[in-house]
Each structure stands twice: as structure tokens, then as C-alpha cells.
Length: 179
Image (tube, rainbow, N blue to C red; front, side, top):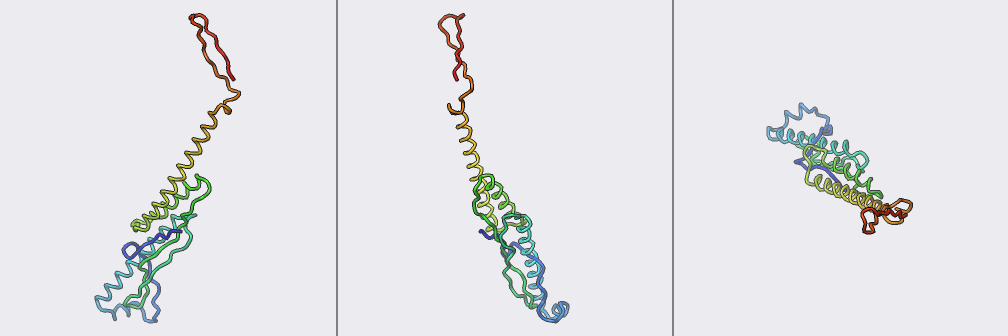
């Protein structure tokens, strides 16, 4: 399982409710201007992180193995804000090449779903691309093997082959049938 996710620079969502009983308006008035800027930045980061992880989940049907897991920080207002997150993705191989092609494409879609994929997201997408490419190679090899087998002498049994035999004169052409 490969985690895909975001870091402080790549995601966000709505903050958890404050644990204290004071209202957010009262909390804002008690914060210094610098603390208010910190809270605004944390809220924006939280929103980006949560939206980022939700994009992975929405696009990752069938390959997402865990819901979003977040790393939090507590702001000067006492509220916990998500500053990073990740979603588990199943990158294991399947038995059939067609299944690996499909799964690889779904992994890529899930990994690259956010508008701002992180470096880890891009690594997971590369794993998906390799899985799909390997599946396509296996499928091509199977098809080539089937084509080779169907053109072998045993496979041609029962089909007619014609050969023109020229005995030296232009009027004496014999056709021989080989089966």
C-alpha cells in the first residue's frame, strides 16, 4: 500500500470545532493581529489539505485502502488544523494483465486527482503507470503467443495450401494440394 497525500503546501479543509466554550468572534478579538494572520493561514491550509485528500478518495474507487488521515497543529486560537494528510492506495499486482492495466490507470487517476499533486502523489502515479505498462506488455506477449500458436503447423492442419509447380513448359502447370 502506498500512501498518497499532501503536506502543508499541498492541501486543506474546514477546521475542527474549538474545544473551548468561547465563541470564535470572542477568540478573534483576543488574538493579536499576528495570531489572527496565523489562524487565517492555518484555516486556508486546513481547507487545502482536506480538499486534496478528498480528491484522492473521490477518484480512487477500488484502490483506496484507508480514509484520509491527517496531521494536525493547534493554532493560537486553540483549534486543531490539518496541516498534512494521506490516503492509502493499493498498488499490489493482480493476476490478469487486463486487471493490472485497469488498476494501474485507477491508481494514476487517484494519485493525480488533486489540482496540486504532491511529490509523493507523483511517485504513486508512477507506480500505477508501471503497473499498467507491465500489464499491457503481458497482454501483448499473450496475444503474440496466441498468434504464434495459431500459425504453427499443428494449428494449420485441415487448411489447404496450394503450390504451383512448373515443369519447364509454360503450359504445364500443376497445382498440388497439401494438407
